Length: 356
Image (cartoon, rainbow, N blue to C red; front, side, top):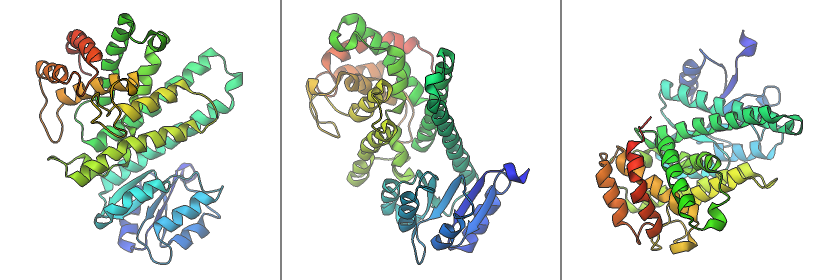
């Protein structure tokens, strides 16, 4: 029935874009087309969409000005917004994400890509609402209900990881692989008694789940940078490094300052420090040695190993033996020497672990 269909609001001053978007989405959703930001604000007084597709470059009130109004109003601040941007607006994409947009789509957009992006974001929003509903009633839940929440959490993470990997152009299951490799290293560190005051209290499964968010910030990086087949320019690499800061910000918004969550605390460590290097040449903080948190040093090894052994738009996959050699060669420069040694011992298990 029409009343059960989700409402999408498409805001663009170009009639061709409105027609193209409505045609692409109308089979699955009710699409309300609006030709300006002021008309969008008027329409929101009587209709609440599940998602707003908002053009950036419009007369009267542009997309950036419009989203500020949306986020300032309690009744509209939670409506997810995806920006529609022209190819020559790439410099403004990061600004839009900072203002609260959840994604952007480049115009002229392809109908299949538009449908996929809309469907994925609606799935994420629905799952977040379900998770909030569960949390509102958490006190009265029994242990079985708590397990249900954890399963839902993993579904959200899997959906987010799928989005990040799809935009990154990765052909393998990077999130799943690094999760498994990290578990090998976690077990090895616990067994070796490294920093027992910390590692002695680790929950390996919780840490592995948290690690899924280590690259979540890549959702904020342009496709042209993520999927570039050749070497990045200095400016492009500087933008790529911003994914760490975006990842930290994303996780901090989930924390919301309400309570101490080990899951999110671990996730922030993985996101913040997996590109730091033992000799201080990494980013974003240029930390060195044991100033880098132990979990960050471990994530660096798992992340690099999978990157080496996986095919990427800019390179072919290295063999297991070649990857081991590169990791071991990085002792004392890129990697913690003690952890690299443990990696060398655990590498055979890495090789035996079948890829999904």
